[in-house]
Amino acid sequence: MSRIPQPTLSLQANFASDLPELSIPWQAEETPEPRLLVVNEPLAADLGLDPEWLRSQDGIGLLTGNRVPEDAAPVAQAYAGHQFGSYVPRLGDGRALLLGEITDSGGHRRDIHLKGSGRTPFARGGDGRAVVGPMLREYLVSEAMHGLGIPTTRSLAVVATGRTVLREEGPMRGAVLARVAASHLRVGSFQYARNHEDPAVLRRLMDQAVALHHPTAAQDANPSLSLLRGVMKAQAGLVAQWLLVGFVHGVMNTDNMTISGETIDYGPCAFMDAFDRNAVYSSIDTGGRYAYGNQPAVAQWNLARFAEALLPLLHEDQDQAVSLATEALGEFPREFGTAFSAGMRRKLGLPADAPDEAVGPLIDDLLALLHQDHVDYTQFFRHLGQAARKDLGPVRDVFTDRPTLDSWLERWQSFIPDPESMERANPVYIPRNHLVEEALNAATAGDLAPLHRLLEAVSDPFHERPGFERYAGPPPEDFGRYRTYCGT
Image 1 (cartoon, rainbow, N blue to C red):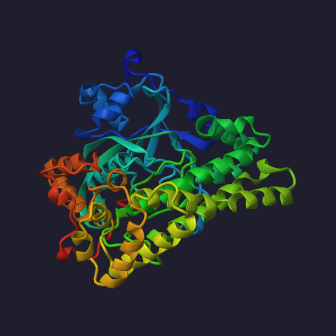
Image 2: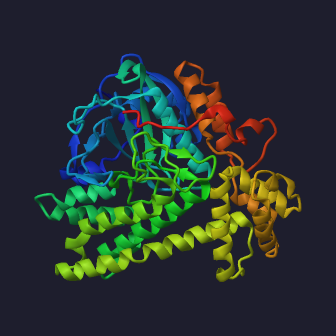
C-alpha cells in the first residue's frame, strides 16, 4: 500500500485511535487492473474531493484502499450482531475497511469506508471480495434513497478491480464500493463492546456515539438513557419513511442498524411494486422475518438489544436499569405511529387540522384496499394526486373493488386534499426492480448507459419529466416473482 502525499488529502483516524479495542489495523488487497465505473460527483464536491482527481491514478488508489494519505490508519471494525434472531458474538468487517474520517463542506465528520477490499481477520471463511452487480446496486439504491430525502449512507464510487471473483453463479467481475456515512457505529458495535473484558470500552463507545450523533444527550443527567431514546426516535422515523415509500430493507440484523439513524447495507433490498404487507425479496429470508410489514416490530426488537447492551451504563442497579430501558422502548410504537401518520397525511394531501380520529381509519382502510387488490403502491399515490384534481379515472382503473374504493374516495375528498403537496410527497420514480435488474445486467456486461439513465430518474424522484415515462410504470406482467441476493 503506497501513500498519497499529505497536502493532497487528509484522513482523520478518530475511530481507530479512540476505540482501538473495536478494530484491527488492516490494509486493502492490491487490485490488479482497477477501473472506475461510476463516481458521485456532487458527493465528492461536498467532501472537498475533486471528481477529476478521483479519476486519476491516485484517486482510484484511494477508492480501492491501495493509495492512502500518509496520516491514514485503515482498520477493519469489530462488532457483533443478531442475524435473523441468532446472536453472533464476533462479526466485524470481513470484507471492508474504514479508511478514516473526512470533514465535509458543512463541517460534519464523514466516514470513508470500503466494501469488497479483501479478506480481514473477520472474514469467517469468505474471500473478502465483492462483485460489480451488488456494488452498483448499493450505489443506485442509496442515491435513490438520498433523492427521496431518507437518511442514508451514500456511495462515492464503484471501482472494478480487474479481478475475477468466484460465486455460486460462476466467475464474476470484482469491484470495490466506497461508502460515505455519518459513522459506522451500529447496534452490533455496542453488543460487541458490552462483552469486552474492559468495561470502560462500552462507556467510551457511548461517549463517541453521543458526541457524533446525539450531542444534547451529554447534558442529560443520564446520557446513556438519552442516547437510547435518541436512537429509538431516529430509527422509528427512519423505518416509517421506509414504509411510506414501499422500501424493504431485507436484512435488518442488529449489525445493520446504525446509531446515526442512517439506512445502511443495501444487500437484498427492494422497493415494492404491488402493495403487499408480507412482501419479501431477500432470497435468504425464507421465514419472512424482515417482510415489509414486519419492519417496525423488528426495529423495536433490535433496539431492545441495544438497550440490553447499554444496561451497565443506564443504572448501577440491574433492576433499575431494566426498568429505565423498558420505559424508553415502550415509546417506540408511539414514535413510529406519529411519524408514519404524519407521512401518510402528506401523501394524502390532508390539512394539518384533520382530526386523528378520522384520519386513522382513513389510512387503515386505504392500506387494506391496496393490499386486497395488490395495487401498485407508488403509482397509486400519483394517480390519487390526479384524483385530487378531479380526474378519478386513473385511480379507479387499477381497482377491482370499485364500490369500496368510491366510498373511500368520498371520505378522502371531504378533506379537500391538496394536490400540490401530494406531488411533493409522492415520488414518480423509484428504483423499479425490473429496471434495476436491467441496468445491473447491462453494467455487468460493460454497458453503463442504462445505469446512468436510471440514476438520472431516481435522483430527482418527485418531478415528472418527459422522456422518463418507462421509469414511472409498473413492471411488465411477465417479470415474475422478484428475488434479491446478498452478493457475498
